Length: 305
Image (cartoon, rainbow, N blue to C red):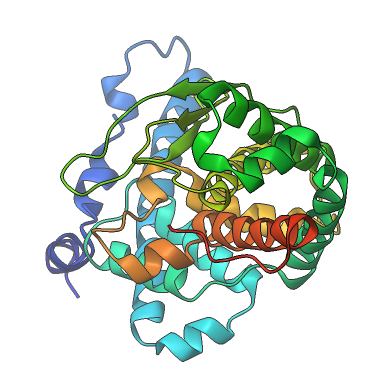
């Protein structure tokens, strides 16, 4: 295939401008700073290598997307976590995935599962947290009569649960920042963990977190996001190695952690729910709600979100 035809195909199908990437780095001739023949040779090699590397990454991304496109969802689901992460790395290596690259990324996320050992460990943590908070006066009072509790009393009880969870996770407890935001246009905002400030933002408005179980679901879910960011940072800093019990799951979180690699609900709801960061936070929160409620009063009604 002639270069110009190949380049047009890559751009139209995968959103990858190979030609631009090939020529993005200036040649040695455009670099008059080379003071000696040796320096000039080095200057010539580096941009060529950089340009070749960009093209190689673009081709690897297209190859990964093509492979995924030729697989059924069931086939993708059968891939090992290591293979899925490898495909995602190739797809995500050239910036925000678009076109067929984004479709492949979504398909992989839609068919990812938690690492079984990691999930088991989270279940054991939930058991320990439920045991720890079952006799706490503030937690019990909030569970028994959530509606009549003041915002400060609710926050105090939730902080106790977060402290117990973070102790099991081995991370600092994020500060809780209360705010009051009414539902708008049918959308209810319960709260969020903001990695930019390291804080848990919790909505105390009467239209949000209507029950104790809803509130526990919110703070455990968002604390789980804080734990994900912690693990990704540990991975990036080289503190998590192959063989570490958190390594495989941290690799999955890392492939989903950047804004460009996060799937929004309006883009693909199934992928949004199944992507590693949301799937983990949702499963863990539901488990905590169930186990805490059972320790306090018996079987738990489902959280309202």
